[in-house]
Each structure stands twice: as C-alpha cells, then as structure tokens.
Length: 605
Image (cartoon, rainbow, N blue to C red; front, top):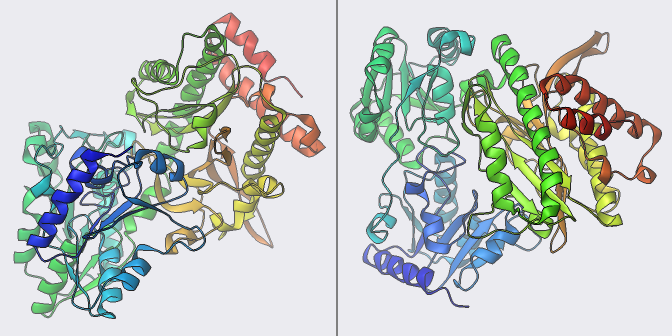
C-alpha cells in the first residue's frame, strides 16, 4: 500500500535539493552531539522515511532513496517503510554496500552531497569528504533542508537543569576538572572542547531532561588552563544552578551561540577535541580558525569517557543498592504477569505500563532509562520493538513475553531483560531459552586477565548458540552510565569490532550488560540480560585476573529450561545463580504468596 505522506515529503525535499544545487542529501539519526537517542526536533530521518528505530541513515537523490540500519532493526524498518519507495539497506549483510561505497559508485564528478553539518559527526563528515574527493564530487554542509520542509517541526527541548550533590557523585566537579586538565597537560594542550552530553553532565555533576530517558542537558563545554565555559539554554537555568556555576567558576554562554563563539575565540597552542563527538560544522570552525591563527587542533578520545566508565566507590555502592531494589520490583512484575496474562485482559502495552508504575514507586526514581520493550511471541523477534496504546498484541496463557526495561534513580541507572513464560511453549523455544541462559551465565562467570577486552570474551555468551547455527545481530554487552545514559562506552562486548572503541580493555569499576539472545522472525524472540560489575580477582605470577560480579538478581524462568541441553557444570551454574537471587531479594518482598512463588521458581533443577 502506497505511503503518500512520506512520498510527498520526499518530493518537497527534492525540490529544496534542486534549489540548493544538492544531488544527494544525507540524514543520520543524531542530534548536535552524536547522542544515541535524539529529541523529536532531530528526528529528520524518521520524518522523511517513517522508520522510528534509534539507528539509521537516510540518503535521498532525485529519483532514489535508501535507508541503512543494523540487524536490530531489519524487521521493524521493513514494516515501517512499506509503501514509501525507500530501499532498505541491511548493514553488515553480504553484498550490501556501505553508504560511502554506494555514493562512490553512483555519484558523478561535480555532483554535491549535502547534509546538515551540525548533526553529522566530524569523523563521518571527513570520511565522506575524502571518499568524494577521489571522484571529484563535493560536500555541502551548511544547510538544514529539513527546516525548510518540516513546517510543524518540534522545538528544541528546553527543561530545567538540576544539581547532583557531591556526596552522591563521589567526586566534586573541581576534582574531576583537575583530572581533565592533567590530561590536557599531558597532551601539551591549551584548550579542550567537550561536546558529548553525558560526559559534560558527568564532569559538571549537573543533570537535565533534554533527551528522552537520558538525564542530560543540551550543552557544550570549553575548558582552558584557567577557565571553563558552559554553553546551555539560559531558560533552563535556575538561581540555584547559576550560583553553583559561579561558585565553581563556570562561565555561562548561550547554547545557540557556540559556532559564533568558536569563530571568534583567540586560539593558541593545541586545542583537543574528539572527532567522534564533535560535529562536522564545529570541527570545521575550530580547524579553520586555529589554522588562521597558527594554532593546532588534536583529535583524542574524550578522556572523560574512560573516567566516567570506571565508577568510583561511592557510585558502585549506590549502584549495587539500586539494582537490588530494581531486581525485586521486576521479580514482582514477573509473578504478576504470569498470573494475569492467562485471564486474557492484558496486552503488551498495559503490561509495560504496569511495570513502569511499579518502578516509579521505588525510592529515588527519576525516569525510565529507555522506553520499556514489552514484546509478545513473534514481536520479540524485533530486538527493539515498542508496543503502543494503539498498536499492541494481546497476551494469552501461552508463549513468551520479552520485557526489556530499566530506570534511572538517584543512585544509578538500570537495564534488565527477562523472557517470561506465559503458558505452553514449544520444544524449540525451550532449547533456545536454555542455551541463551547458558551463554549469559558462561560470560558472567568468566575469569580473565587484565588487558582483555570484550572481543576476547564474546564467544562465552555467543558460543552455545553458534554451536546450533544461530547468531544474534548485535553486541553482547554495553557499558551503563551512573544516573546517566543506559548505553555508554568505550567498553563493549561483541565479536566483530566496529571501531577502535571496541578494543577498550575492561577495567575494575566498569559496569556492563551481558545479553545474548535468539531472534527467529515470525516465531519468537528471547533475550536474557544481566548487568555485571568488573572486579579484581586473584593476582599471581601470571598477572592480575579480573572477573564479574552480578548486579542483577532476577530469576531465570525455570519453566523454559530443559535439562537435556545442559552439562552438569551448567546445571550447577543455574542453581547457584537462582539461589543467589532468592537470598538477595527475598528480604525485600513482603507478600507471602510472592515469597512462596519465588522459592519455588528458584529451587534447584
């Protein structure tokens, strides 16, 4: 069925492209800071193709449009773009060109690739620039064509900023700033431009609500040897925040003036930046102006990224407590949904709303850490499926319900997935669930030498599924912020390296997810996700060993485990984990019927 709305929008965009001498126009999923989740103002790609997933890039020419996304979203993108005339390019699949490869093969000499330079990271903009130069094509980055077509575009988010007390953060802003300036000194730098929102919030101990489910502030931070300038929307500032900034010698400047300010700044020596997180337009501004003043710029990984990845003692103590309370709440939900679903009165959306309400009652709750994924049966085969009030599946007393959820609290950010048996399931579903559980615990119980990264460990989680010819088209693990974004780097667990970030070694104090899964289109989806803390283990003549400590204490679903697929050591691992769950969260559960259910749900296999 033809999607006339999207086709009309694309026609209007093409008219603007022609007016501006642009042959191809590129629209990523990004804000001005390369954030993972973008506010409604930035959802340009969604406006022009209909795909709502959190990762994708749309490219439009005079007669063609293509949208690239990763394996988490293949099924969803195909459904949402039906009838739009936009071609889906499945990233990473055999024979599928990258965007850069497609442009090199199809653009002609003299043609122009356009994009809004404020939303394309410098690393990507430079890559396109280099590739197109070889075929004598050009880049034009100074026009946001969506602004001219999207007449009812939402406004930039603007919400109050709040302060986290030092005792909650473990370190003051000034202590963290000293560490950053030490890095600047090591690099012989006079200035450092920080554009990554969660890094800015971590460093300043400020939080906000400018991105859904991420407690961050639209901001930039410019640090020199003697001063710090914070660019924010002044409507977000209270007297308390202004006083805090004054006390900490943070100068305030308007968020919208960043380009003009950088254009006028008297650069000297070296200015540090991270081309992954600085936009192409910001990069061009500091690069061109530094060069004109005989100064230099230097690309480094944001030092704040590793600083915030390794949690301090205060953060770890609070995180552990938050995860126990969060685990108890999810366990209560599992009991409730198993009991209520067979009655036929629930659907995916109402189940998710019930869990969201349960979380909101917990001490220190701020907001969800991402929209709750509640996916029943074959909907769960779409990794990031999201039911709505108007579009959802009814729950019945059969099959699996996959629930991926989390919250941000004064004390930590949580993320956990459980696949819940609502009634009769097939032998295949039991097999897939059992092997997913084996993989999750195999990774969680790993012991490894300091210096290992996620690529060294991924096979432990993925191996049981690879052994039966099944893979999941995503990473196994990601870092998690502290009262911040649910996804953070630089560390990750995946077998296939995407960039240098994926080579980051695991260090004590890092928090990360462990979430293998099975996704069979048209049948079912299974994911089991625990959050782990990296801790020191034994140290001997062979070196310092590390291991993981569970932060998630939610039972595995005993009804989905088939012992015939388990080795004795795997049975022991499941039993040990279930006992740990019971011992940890039973004291937090007051209702006798839930206590009795939990005791039975966690008894040895």
